[in-house]
Length: 166
Image 1 (tube, rainbow, N blue to C red):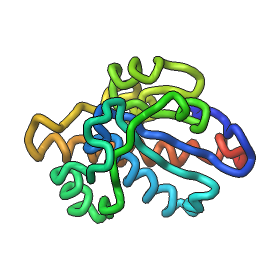
Image 2 (image 1 turned 120 degrees about the horizontal axis):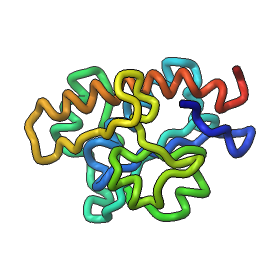
Image 3 (image 1 turned 30 degrees about the horizontal axis):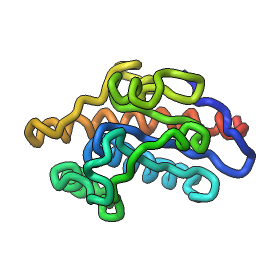
């Protein structure tokens, strides 16, 4: 599956969306931003990654400590994350929005040419959901990280075409 083309020539904005913006979407945000930087596409004025939640009860909070610990243990820096809330303006501001599961997808208006499931680009299980690890144990966060890493690699591989650089 391809990414939608950039809306403008000066930037590409990718949004990750989950329920509370403290577990899945910030993990995907941190990993994808890291992968983009490693690929040499990391100028935030050119390719920007953001994340938000469809619920507003965690706005301003840091990432769930278990999610942050999983990321730190894997060599990522989760320290700057603060939860944000989705609003309809994100649909016009972002080039692509990735929902973590079907409910998140429905909450932001459903599929469109710029709204899809994050794992639509997963090379192992395209179209799968990213399960919410919040109510489970540490293994759930490790499982989410593995999904996020391989899907982020696929997104980075698809970015040059979306940027018009293929």
